[in-house]
Image (tube, rainbow, N blue to C red):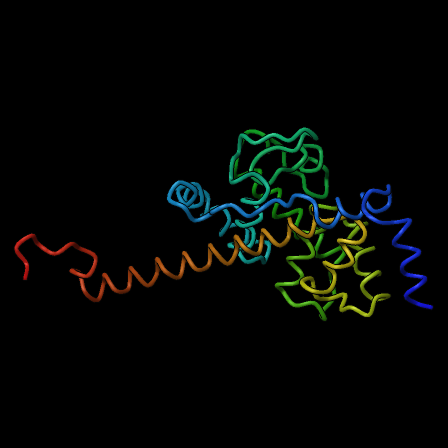
Length: 232
């Protein structure tokens, strides 16, 4: 009886029907793959801005590399980036959002420091207002704030509420709240947060690798130099 009911449903909701096509597009449509954030060219952009990410990450209590990863997802760290909706700069903020009294920062379209400052301050506002829950660890708090940054805090509330109803953990993004997000707004926000985490891991590994190289070079000054041509 169950099989008969499912078969009947599939006959009227399969791909080719309006319902089937909407779901196929939502869950299996073209994804936005992560870019290579640590290539030589992209690494130069990161190094030009990393001090700002560290400064404001520390001020607003975020992992600087996670914020840098979000900036890369938003604009590829390009202050000249402009969206069709009017978002500007590295963190792709609306100037009106940045100028709101809760943020109070103007000139985000011209100055990357102001732009990053405003973006991180807005992230802190999202955390303090919507994620002030000791049951959420720092990583998941930042990931869910990023989801709110992308989809809006109202949608984040819906994601977490649906996660609870579905028997998922509302305090964990991956494998839990992200599933609710996919059901409510589709793949965009899920891919957005996933890409940020990919970039974060890439940045962290790059920083650790550079630190190891410096340590090896300091302990053995010849380690980073090519051997002379007549070396055995």
